[in-house]
Structures are given as C-alpha cells and as structure tokens.
Length: 178
Image 1 (cartoon, rainbow, N blue to C red):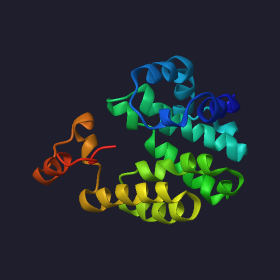
Image 2 (image 1 turned 90 degrees about the vertical axis):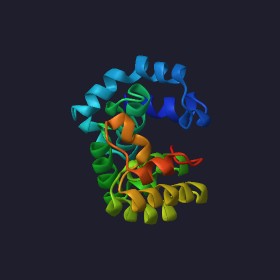
Image 3 (image 1 turned 60 degrees about the vertical axis):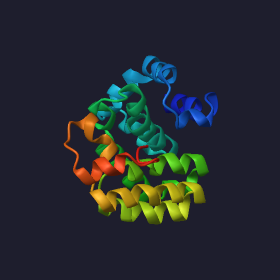
C-alpha cells in the first residue's frame, strides 16, 4: 500500500502540485487517501516503518496529505507532531541515505513545519546536508519566522490564535505566509 502513496506523490502528479493551493487537487487526495490518513493518524500503518520508503510514505500521508485534505482548518496541522517524530526516527535510522533528493525533502518537511526553535536548529543542519540549496534557503526563511515569533503567524487565524501587532504587520509583507 505504501508504494501507492509514493507512486502517486512522485510519479503520477506534477511536482508543481506539491506547492500550490488547488481545490481540485485537494479533492483528489481526499477521495483517494482520506481513509489512509485516518489509519496513519491512528498509528495503524506502523508496519510501513520497516523500510525507508515506507517511513517516507507514512510521513507524506501525515504531513502533506493532512494539509490537502483539511486545508484551512486546524486539522491540517493535527498530525504534525506524529510526522515529526517519524521523521526524527527515520533520520536516526539513517533512512535519508536510501532516498533520492525529492524523497529526502519530504522526509525532512515535518522539521520545516514545526513551530519549535529547537527543531529548526536541527532542520537547518539537515536541510543544509541533505537537501538542494533552494530547499535549504526555504528552511532558513521558515527558521527566521520561528526565531522571531516562536510560531507561524499565518496559522493564527486558522488555529484560533490571537495575533500580536508585530505579527499583523509582518503578515502584510509579501511572502509572509506559506
């Protein structure tokens, strides 16, 4: 089953679909993979963790598909902690060494999505060592926001958090949200 996830994510769709907000694409992922996300969220896909590719597939489901399936709702971020733990375990198990560049980027993405300064210290090193330069630069931009605010201000309204005046001013700048 995890091979279906990887084939879909890395072969069946265009890479540009990874980064754009597209209701039709979100609907496609919802129709095809919402039950898989439910299984992953319940910890039921643990057998996938026996290989680097299986770990990666579970991380993609939790970290990426959750954002598509639950776009603009708090549930989009509900699996971030589990995805991060799986990514940390995969890094500790040297799973990055058995993955190609695109696969490594998505295995590391939970680090970038974290709202923890400590995690972004790790992310900076991991992206520098295992990701292309443009992804490393993108991590540095994320880290700067976390270092400044301790969270991603663009998530505040979705998560029902109050924004500070400084965050509101920041959100008016181009490129302040991802």
